[in-house]
Length: 269
Figure (cartoon, rainbow, N blue to C red):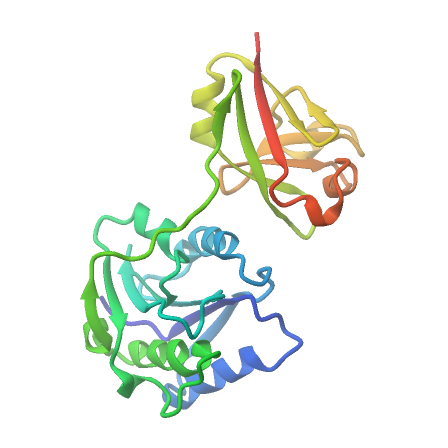
């Protein structure tokens, strides 16, 4: 695979501290021609499942050969492995904690390497900042054309992601709210295929918190301003929103309890 000078960054670091800038400085010190792109640094601390869904949704819109660095790493400094992998024409670098599991599940030609070659790390490696001291320099070396296998040893047992799966319960499909976006929309773990397979020709009755929605819409303006709606979003996930409003504020669930709130879909003839 032809290497790319594009390196994306996804972390839970936020932007009020210098951590992201440190990673970029390391990358540019090794490859001054690298182009870094921020996917997001606003992942909730330690939210591996959310990070995994974001990187899966985002990477495919970058050119083939792009290197994606993910650092949502609550186990940093433990015996968890550090990996690089090639899948679907892209390269991913980060902790082996399930962060790239969704990508691996979709890939037919993936190769995974445990990062063991310390000559490609910074000379001094902190036990709490592998993003700066390991993942950033390895990504920079890869962007210069280094073969991924030079960074370590091939492995066949990457750590799977533990994540909530919609379940059937008393003739209903029950999922969870897994993310609340900037607009207050409630994004669930119920995918389009799962939803359509469950509903068949029936109409949905969708319940989340105190909201009840009796149909699937396509766009926000399908309902009147201030009214709730449910639709399949651009990532093919069931989403609950309010047209020109914030579903997170009208669902009857405290903000800190929204993640993990059940969304229940029943069939109506």
